[in-house]
Image (cartoon, rainbow, N blue to C red; front, side):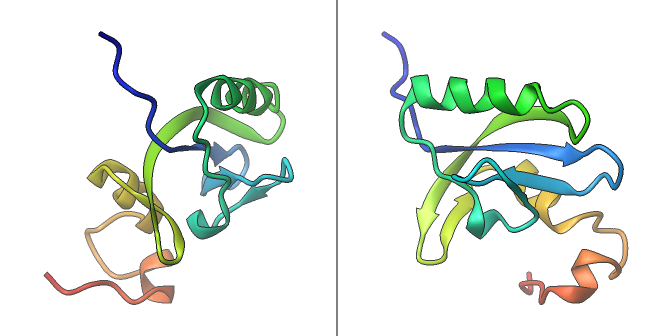
Length: 104
């Protein structure tokens, strides 16, 4: 029996800058996960991913990432996506310096 489709976002890396980016409902790209379009239909998700893959002059490595919808919009389900979103964890710099990090 196939697994039910779970909410997803289209994510990729910006070709020139390398930043993690997310596709919005308006076919734009954003660096903010909270602004990403949440896809709840598998056919629509495949279409949106195909559109992203055709933007080779802007993005690289587009794929569908699982998310859950939280109070501020989509949130990562898997630690890999949370890691991609916040950047390297070896020291406090770049995106980590700009965004408060939760204490562990």
